[in-house]
Amino acid sequence: MNLKDSVSYLLARLTTAHRNLLERTMTEIGLHSGQVFVLLELWKTDGLRQVDLAERLNLAAPTVNKVLGGMLEADLVTRERYENDARSTRIFLTPKGNSVRGDLEKKWAEVEEQTVMGLTETEALILKQLLAKLLGEV
Image 1 (cartoon, rainbow, N blue to C red):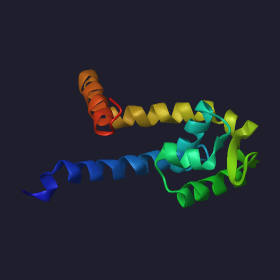
Image 2 (image 1 turned 180 degrees about the vertical axis):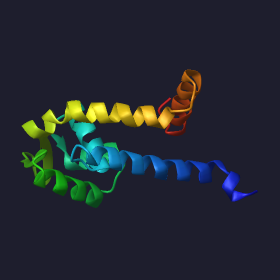
Image 3 (image 1 turned 180 degrees about the horizontal axis):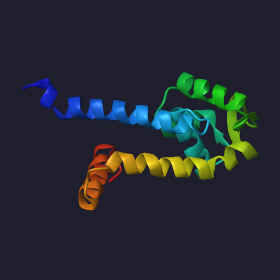
């Protein structure tokens, strides 16, 4: 088997290119790509415990802590001690964290458009379904 013809090789190249596109696009509105996923989770459920945020994002706690550090500095979130456990913290959106939603959604639509450019509507739908299946979300 030629490794360059494998699904894993093609998927790795695609994810790298997509991550770079996402990073470039989100930088235009002052965000890093990792912050986007934290914001998405907090817009669904504000005040998540940091450990729950790490679990939802399938990331190690130190990685989430690093992302949150940048978000705290940018005044996108605040961190408060969890009332039942002094070692645990909850993460809350600030007004600024809530206010970037419109810009983020606009930029996300641009990324989505570039991602499926060259595909038919049917191909884009099939790709979405296949990716969801590979992620175990179907």
